[in-house]
Figure 1 (cartoon, rainbow, N blue to C red):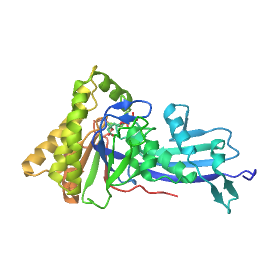
Figure 2 (figure 1 turned 180 degrees about the vertical axis):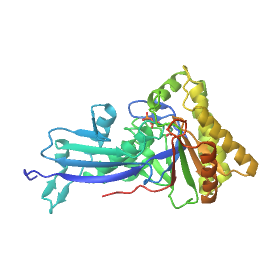
Figure 3 (figure 1 turned 30 degrees about the vertical axis):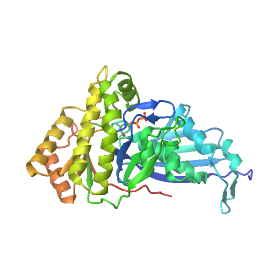
Figure 4 (figure 1 turned 90 degrees about the vertical axis):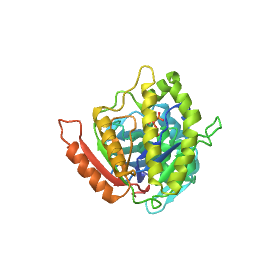
Length: 359
Ligand code: DP6
């Protein structure tokens, strides 16, 4: 490797994903291995995404990272595990134009600078860690010329944040819980790409952009320790739902998709209530949105909109097509006008979409 001062960098953009069959509970806290499979839809990267630039240079004296412009510590085990795993897989890199020549063995001693930006509120229940760790792993893999496929990369992103493993693919994605103790088979796979069911439109009602009180990580730990409903859900309910959801996605069966998404979201929040002490992620506005959608679906005779809520009050609404999405947005704006002093902040609209590299 030449001793001169060069900086070699890569930028990538990764969308977030929303689970329609939820991951809630770990069987291994360190490796981040879940108690059940989950299925998600990847969002349009132009609206909800993380953009990360990773740079390497002999001039850098230590690994450093900035999140939304503020330096954060990389000392936590989640970052350390991701960095270690990806470094150990680094390959040779040569860029003659820039005078860069890095050999495989150099990755262990070269330091990195990482700058990451979310274009949505961090920790407001919009799965920022999912896009964040997926983008970190994806951009580092590009930088270091790692030749793993997206599923293998997903097993690394998983060690940053469980839901991150599903953001390595566009479209519909399943995170297989796996059965091995080392987690090597706990990976994400794509069920269908973003073109398979492109009628769907996703509207996120940002009910609150405040940081949630109970993080997903600690909430699910408490549920594993105290909720009997979680045990029942993981063993008896989710395995059947996963099969049904895969079938619904394959057949673009919106009625089944809606029934499964809504009941799974409601059961996840029931598990939160069954946790001791109980965890409340949804608020009154979330409940009123559920009632509105349920009434509308019943009055139409056939489901028009599916809803799902993650670990926060924001509603993720999936409309069966663009026409329905327009009607839905009109209804939401009428009943829940976004204002700074009310419980409704804004709406984000996007299609399900694909992971794309920005540079
Ligand atoms: C409710 O992936 O944020 O969004 O693995 O501890 O980082 P950690 O948790 P995280 O949990 C996401 C929980 C969820 C459901 C889901 O995305 O499947």
